[in-house]
Amino acid sequence: MQVLNVANLNGIQLRTGCFCNPGACQRHLKLSDDDLRSHFQAGHVCGDERDLVNGQPTGSVRVSFGYMTTKSDVDKLINMLTSYFVQGPPVRKLPEWWPDFKQAYIQKYQSVLQKCDGLLNVDRVKTPAIVDGRPKLQINGDADDSNCISNYLQLNTMPHETVDGSSITVTDIYVYPVKSCGGMRTDSWVTGSKGLLYDREWMVVTPAGVGLTQKRDPKLCLIQPSIDLNSGLLILRFPEMPPISVPLDVTKNHNDSRVETSLCQSKVCGDRVQGWDCGDDVASWLSDALGRQGLRLIQQSVCDSRVSKGKNKLTAQDSNAEPVLSLSNEAQFLLVNRSSVEWLSNQLDKDQCDCNKETLLERFRSNLVIQGLKPFEENEWAHFQIGEVKFQSEGSCTRCQIVCIDQTTGEKTREPLRTLAAIFHGKTRFGVYLSQVSKGNMNISIGDKVNIL
Image 1 (cartoon, rainbow, N blue to C red):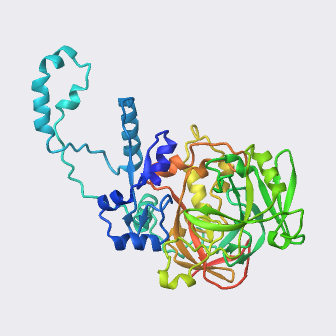
Image 2 (tube, rainbow, N blue to C red):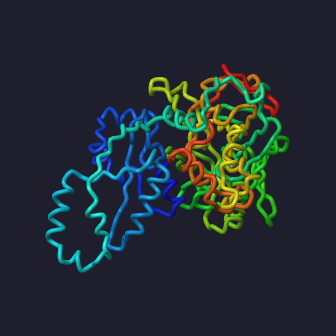
Image 3 (cartoon, helix red, strand yellow):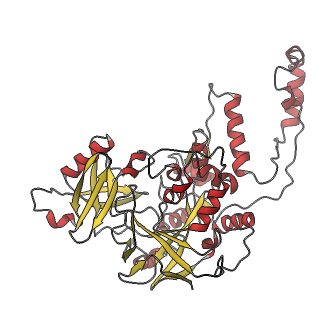
């Protein structure tokens, strides 16, 4: 997925995964039947974004060349690979048969090559083979991502050390009631069984039943949901349109003729999810706001039982103990460190940066924002506590093009993903997934202290 994201940033179209050929994929990746079963038990399904499971690749990258492909197209691809994914000076390694082929080629076309007088890439033909003597790099797994970041930043601190000796605290709390829509900032909020209460409990779906995200329609970020606990309503707002509201529990109104609901199915990251349709009024409002016909708003059913896809995913036998999910992609919570955001902001080219640094934090769509750490120190945590709530880390969040969307305007940019990928050799991980260890509903507030366990 990191290669795909970087390619999209550079205007290069390629395919990743198994290309609808799981048998060939299994053979070329040398995966056993047991490997495939373990990947499935770990949450990997066809079409998702999990390209590694326990360090094993689940697919590959395919670049297609046709009769219209030009040398500049190939050069652009090579430049992308060397710029983002090659550590150290690039080394060209030619196949073993190349010297014999080269000699035969020169002898066969000697007269033509002389007439060309340098117009062709003859220098490429005459270039001797170069053997790559570098040790092979192991780039699979979270540990190597952590090492890459630590080496770049020269972070040798213990996880509990802070920037200025002050305590680590929560500075921001965001709830995203509707998946891929705007966030609601709050001073205090309650955790539920699936994360922050009402976080990503609703989703906009297309007529085909597919969840609509900012990748397909950036204007989703302009829909601003808010939760009114006193009146029991989800309120949606959009520029130059009147607000609309739906009940927080739409199932209680299934006999109300004003709100017709029905049980429906959709998909989130390969998982089938069940939800309740929230009615025609809000569906019409969404279609008018986004200029798309046939949109519906669904609320996740309480019977839906998606589980966390984080690195601490349990075995199938222990699946009842796994953290359950709302309509979020990977885990119950996403945490971001302010120091990491500030560090990244300072890396952006002041003259060529096309994104507003003032709204950089909002692009990462985190639930919890903390301060009091060095950049990327949060990646080293395993277990910690915020106030009275205990959490465990579920690994780093791999970023996609959504961080290149200004959450205040809906405009697309190339930053900050381009800089993030360039600095960390194609790795686009930023922020940490969390699961709640403490049971029951508990409160988190701005100013709560964070303690490393």
